[in-house]
Length: 350
Image (tube, rainbow, N blue to C red; front, side, top):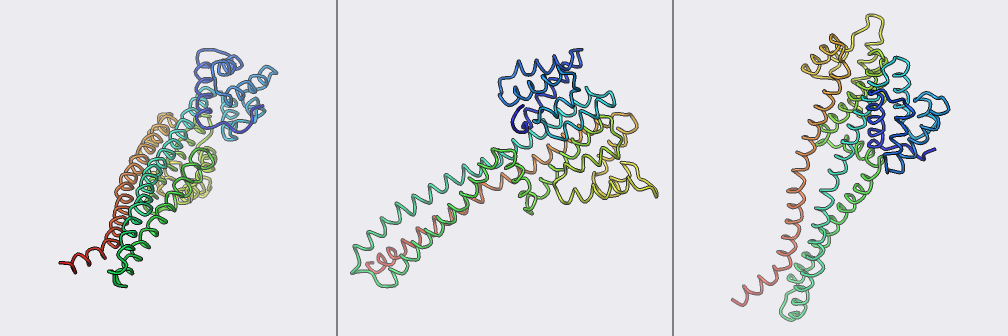
């Protein structure tokens, strides 16, 4: 049995590979064995072998996945539903799309943390050099002129040194926070924690809302592809929503769909509670009429993800000038404060 739950990238690889081979007539046990035989990653290889052993004993794919103990519960539930409705191929493809989307999301979170972290480390070095190397030079010069300096001049020196240390301390503190975020971004749990934190920041709220809506839409597509009716699909997809604002909207929509006095359709419920905008609702209505709901939802999910990425990129574009401006002001004020006594002395000499 494989240890731990597979990451999003491994899940996407497993489901896409198995779906592709099933679509050309390969048996499930042979398909899973090919995944194990062709993959060099220890986690995915161990998971596929665990599933393969259960399949040889006569288990269904969903049962084998559950016995392996390394697949997300939601994925196992979806595969089981796909087997019951005879839509296993569609379910596996939809799961591959969902975990691809999640992988893109997690990579974006990680890359969003790396850039500010590197920038802050560079700025910390600049501040440390200023406070640790440049300021002591001025301080030594002034100490050699002790007989020529007034008390007020020494006070200005002390103020300048204090400003430098405060600026350095603030920069190092922010850098430490960025480093912690970078370390956290290397694990699935840490990335989810960063997503939760980002949702609480006013300037990042819209981008993270769009990300959560994208994940909800991808999850809804997966449950729809598994053959579940819209009410059940929305109810299950709701469990994947971690954004409070979106969760409240979807919860109200779901309750109105489950109501018997009278019950709303999916499009009516989502329209009444503002889950999607007008264009997206028209796409949903088209998907319902043509029976291509899962495909429409997958397309919507991709578009929502791209919008969210654009929003995050716009935020990152503002990070560099803000951080650079902070350090520039700190270094400039520090050097000016330290050099003021020298300016006063030059004026007295003149």
